[in-house]
Length: 252
Image (cartoon, rainbow, N blue to C red):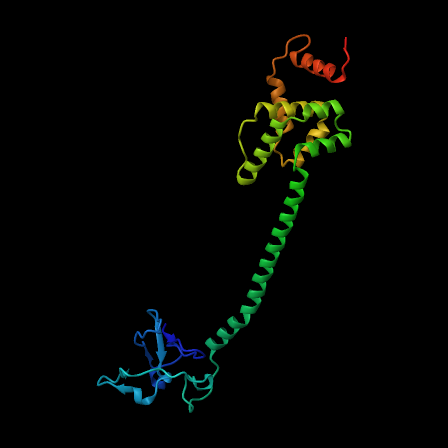
């Protein structure tokens, strides 16, 4: 449906007819003219001297014709003598125009809401990063809250565990799906030891570190796979040995 591309002009083919003396023309491709395949200019914007009628009764433009920008009041689509009537298409266009600000405000509201949510998430991430800046701070916090003793603090403070946990956290942030990576031996030992000393402390650390540590059910499966024979296990003797070394006293 061709329509006039001139500013303020609302003439288009379904609203006007040739009986009103309005025709539509494709302007020549001048240097400053950027038309598309459907760009048209109505005859209202051309002087009478620039137009002529062909033998077939078609209104054509001379090669030297150049459009003239008319004022909005002069861009009319019906003759002055025609009886006034309500143009339902104009009314629908006006309603669509009046709806535009409402839609714009809705979009702006949604945009502001997204920006606010992003800021809140960024602040939350910064707070969490401060909490997990180093394993020592977390362990000191556990020690302060009496989740672990001094001996347990020294045993849990292992550098490889810190590296493994933070590496896993970074991978979890980058990955949209859940990770299915094997836990390193140092990390397995840390998780089992901390959960053995204090399940509450383990739950707290796991929550702070974005569930980088294994779930307690996983720890239960690890316990099931451990080789347990009648009597004392080697892990028990190792634990007693470490306690003896840390205390500086013989246990037996």
